[in-house]
Length: 107
Figure 1 (spheres, rainbow, N blue to C red):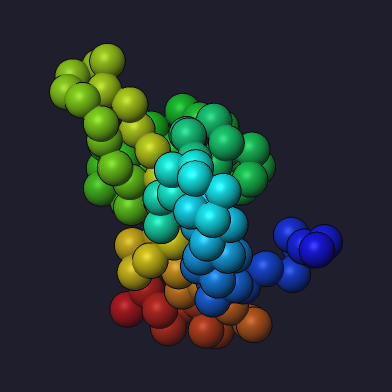
Figure 2: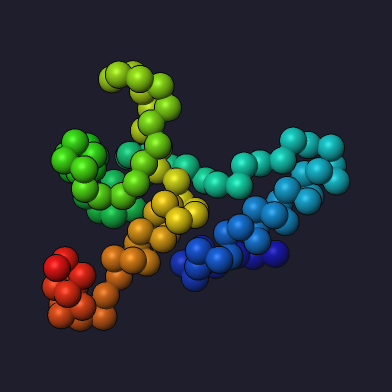
């Protein structure tokens, strides 16, 4: 089965993960998580911005929701792709057809 990654929607990924889980269980492997997490660097590449810009967004409380594993500067920041607080949902919510839609969303 080939998957066109460019055409994936938020609803497709849980179905794919479920299929992978069924396969893994049937072959006695441990199932994978119901979410996928990416690093700051991976998100920076995805959005074509710098990792330091994403760091700034976290400091001022803007930008995409993230999870921090560990504490202090050694804690690892990860961005979930799926779910209500996931990147796909965040990107969907911040996708517009015109600048008037965007201006209305910031009021």
